[in-house]
Each structure stands twice: as C-alpha cells, then as structure tokens.
Amino acid sequence: TDAQKLLSQYEVQAPTVSETPGQYQRELQVSLFAEDSCTIYYTTDGNEPTTDSKLYTEPILIEDGTVVIKAICVNKKGIPSLVATKTYQVEIPIEDAPAVTPSTGQYTSATQISITVPEGYTAYYTMDNTTPTTASTQYTGPIDMPEGQTIFSAILVNKNGKTTQVTKRNYVLNLQ
Image (tube, helix red, strand yellow):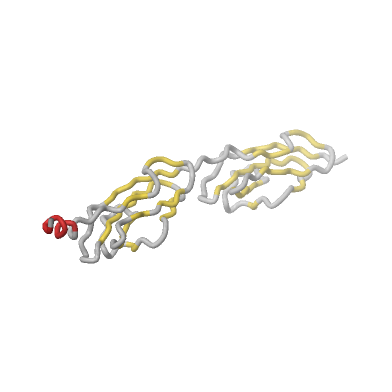
C-alpha cells in the first residue's frame, strides 16, 4: 500500500557487522554494512553516534583491548536508524618468558648468549641484574658473554607493547 511505501522511507535499518561480537585472540577488522542509500557513522569511544561522528569508509581495526562500536545509518532524507552496539574483546595471547641459551653455568671459553625471538616480538636485555624494559638494550643478534660473573635478563615485547615474564641466567666466564 501507499502508506507502507511512505512509512518505509522513514524506517532505516541499523548497520550490520562482519564479525560476531565477542572475545577474540587475534586482531579484528570489523566491516559495517547498510542499505544502499544509507551513510554509516560510528564511534568507538562509547558515545552515541551522530552525523558528526566518524564516517564509515573502511573496516575498523581492533588490535587489543575492549572496543564498543556504536553505529547508525542515515538515509538520504537525513533520518537515522536505531544505534547498533557491538562489543569486541581482543586479547592476543602473549608468549611466555623468552628462551635464552646457553643455560646458567660456568664457562671457560668464549661463548655467545642468544635469545629466541618469535615473529611479532622484539627482545630487550640487561646484563647488570636489573629488569629489562623497552628502554634497555634491544637484542639484534648473539652477544659475547662478558668475562667474570654476569646476571643476564631478557624480555620479549609484542607489537602492542605487552611484555613477557623475565628470563634470567647467571653466567660465570673464566677464560683459560
């Protein structure tokens, strides 16, 4: 009927999403979909979306943490849909403490210390019994073990800045 046609111009469907809301252990790219004649606006800061919010043009990348996407469709007449609210929790598992070789012990010949660095991580180390941070020396390859006693400590940091547990090794090098 004509009344239904007229009414349909004022009924705007809320946006739909490409990814089911929930918990993930990987980065997400969330796409928003709407009716052809609609423009999508969204927020990720908890605020209600308006036509002053971000205009949706490409998938929303969620790298880490909890993100609430709130989105509306606005039709050509400027009529907004109801708000679609979708919550995503991304918690990428982090490696355990780094593998450091050789093991703690006494050495009598020149020895190199190595850290196994998994893909997506950077390793940092100290050799003075302090806990390493991202401000410590970055590991770029095997390190010559210093003579005497050394307390070697290493961490891994992922690209989101999350840090693993510390691996400590106590080395004593007495060259013959």
